Image 1 (cartoon, rainbow, N blue to C red):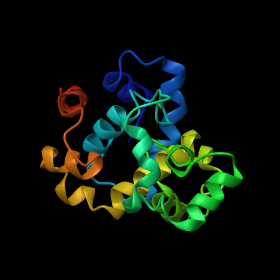
Image 2 (image 1 turned 90 degrees about the horizontal axis):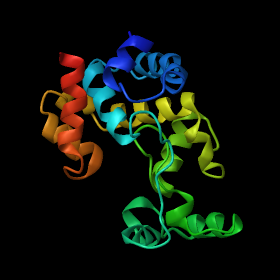
Image 3 (image 1 turned 135 degrees about the vertical axis):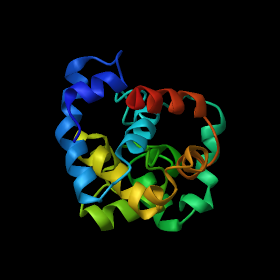
Image 4 (image 1 turned 90 degrees about the vertical axis):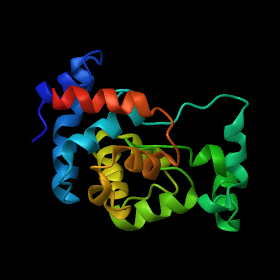
Length: 180
């Protein structure tokens, strides 16, 4: 069971009020998506959210994120994705930038979250930034990607979540705090 004390141990530098907002949503998502490897899940979402501070990907005016507009693997080149983003005065890569505690990214992933959660996050991606939906989208990703089955291999788990080993040492620090 996730408690505020457990989250404080995990993220000692995050303001207590911010952590308190995630206790109930995390417990709900862990139960809803039958997450067994809770420590590994919490370590990964703590890293992905900067210690439960960010539920929207940080986005600068230039840089590699601009390539997200042409990421077919994320569904961002789908004509419907382009149409929806343009209707909101945006481009697909920016409109469906990472949201939630595991940073759901791209039109196709937002469609999967919409279908599974019954939440119109395709037209309103900001919905995945709210604590409950941020935790649910992380739990959904965890379950859909078989993360419990590989959680004992933390490197493999990180690759599954991140696509590489970005922040691997930081993720291990979070896990070590929970295992101490």
